[in-house]
Length: 183
Image (cartoon, helix red, strand yellow):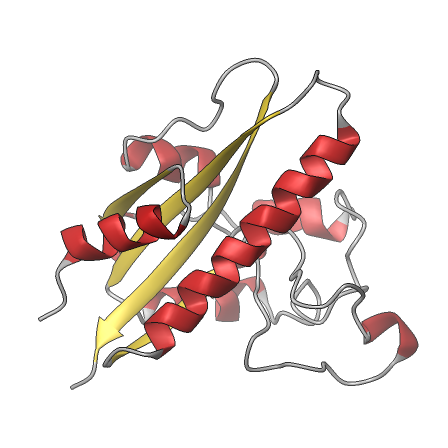
């Protein structure tokens, strides 16, 4: 039996500011989040293998999440010089992506099936091969975003007792470990 409290603690020890367990049935989904992707709000629509439309339909992404009964939401909170500190936001995103990959690797080592969702575009490679028309370099490591899967992250944070906004001159990123024990 996998101990959820232990997982939360391990993810925090890996570098998360906070983490919290949630049953997947309690994750708030909204298909409307896909429209932000389709409007290219982050600039990666059709430019990253794990972003829409290549991530799959919203229904298939939601179904992929719902296969896993357990989840741990984790966040990183990073200070910024000011609200225009784009470099600080980028550095925080890179650090969050590193943590996401550490979580992914750690849970591949234990006896459970798992996937990890991240913040924004994949981030495994410095540049995605999608714009060049080449296949993904690391499809087994590639990370899809919570939003591409239709997850309402601000509501999920509330459900988990985590703050979505953590004060002036900070940036907060979220990741989600989904897991189930092998039958």
